[in-house]
Length: 165
Image 1: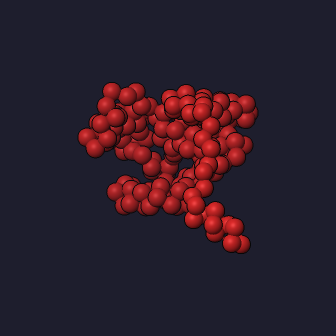
Image 2 (image 1 turned 135 degrees about the horizontal axis):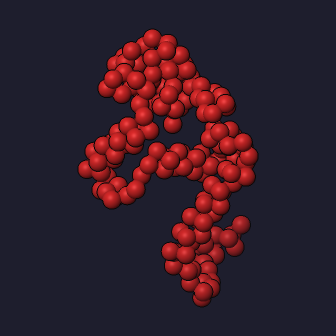
Image 3 (image 1 turned 120 degrees about the vertical axis):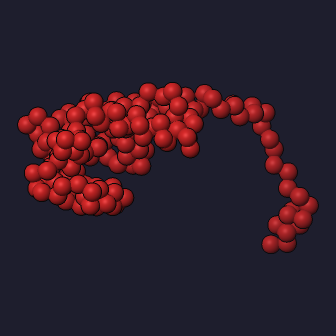
């Protein structure tokens, strides 16, 4: 998720520069994210120093403003997706879900660590453990396979075909 303090100058439609603390990194954008930003840029002030995500006063949106917009979006989305109702979803939840999606899509953990801004991949390793725990929980919910071995019995037509070879 792009930083709430990102300026128009920080964004190209291929990547975004994000600075947190004294760190700065370039993060590639998915095509659909770039398309959404392109449409968004038509609605906002496009001067280089203008915030990409302005509040009503035209200043950078605050963290609480982002959380409020997320709550509004979740309320709207829950009409079509009732499972969202009553769930605690924060910007960090979105960040975590994106990292898990990348991991499950086969993206290397060091790349995910870079995107998240983790200095140490050990911090990112928690996503691997969470993924393994999710897989284990899914296996436990499944019924165990039948312990009685099933013996294959070929039909007469198959046996006749094989004998004719």
